[in-house]
Length: 204
Image 1 (cartoon, rainbow, N blue to C red):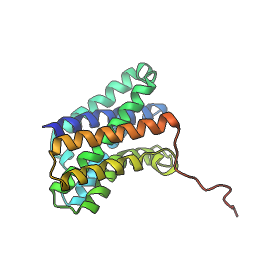
Image 2: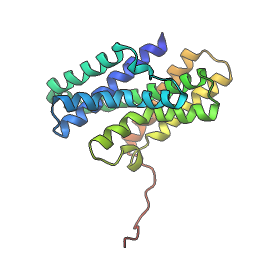
Image 3: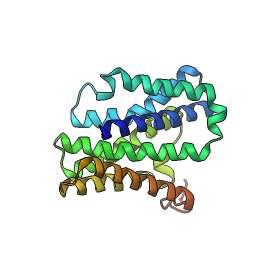
Image 4: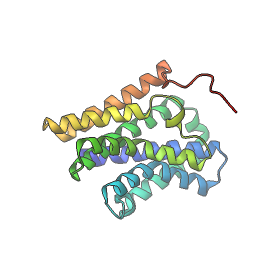
């Protein structure tokens, strides 16, 4: 029950961030909804495909599509007001990252994945939707060019695997791990931490 509630919270957060990015790129209402859906559902679809769960869970039940599509439409209508809430939007995106990374890891473990595979699948669940969003908007995915994003997702996935190996309550582990991801992500934004970038590359 906790996992489901967190998953829908993450869906809303990612759908909103994707829809805002689409609005900034001047897409029409259909484009905004498509990007919002892709951002919210992309990571989960990739996760299920990797685990052999077909059709993917989010495409089998209508509430997933309804919640994400509705969120994207709300953003399309009220984007001037929502865009002003920059910190809230960043927090929502961090929340989505934490929820999807940790929930994806838990689902992978429950499906019989090894701890190593579960960590990678959890991280991919967290960052997958955002990467597809950026590709649709013809941008280099954020996770590949700056900011501590994938590292935070991987850290949360590792915490879930550790909690699972210690047989701790899965709901509590998921909540704590998701909170850790959000904390690392927001701290990285506040301190402006970025992964190292090669300096002065030679061009030919």
